[in-house]
Amino acid sequence: MNPVRAVKFQLYVLQLENYNLSRFLKVVLRNLRPQAGPFKKPLIFTPKLVLILCLAVILKLIFAGWIAGFFAAWLGKVLLFFALVYLFSLCFFVFLVISAIIIYPADFLAKTWIIKKAKRKLVSLYNLRIIAVTGSYGKTTMKELLRTVL
Image (cartoon, rainbow, N blue to C red; front, side, top):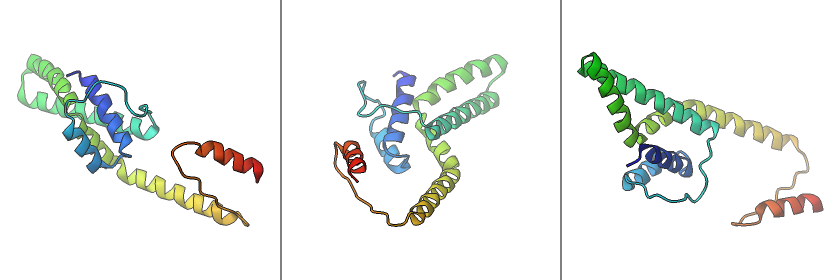
């Protein structure tokens, strides 16, 4: 299996499942050999996804280097390191989970701060009318139409 495709699939599932690790693991473990083909939505490299990806790559390299350094002589270390980097790409979801757990406290604080800021903004706006628009299609158009009319 192509490790790049496997990592891309795992990143896609992590983002699609809104970083919920239990749902992410269920999907990834059910599909250890991801199917080729287009995704439902495009993979978007948000700052959160990039942070998780970078941290996962760093953890993978550190772990591969630690194992290679522990078990082999100099030339064997280099070969073992590259072999482990390749093999760890196939089970990259483990490093993604660890990375998501590591950044969770900062992510939680950022979300809490944003929610508090939004609540203060809503309280500061007097005579505010809230209109909920739901559905699968046309929400943005309806929002723009309501803004123009009101």
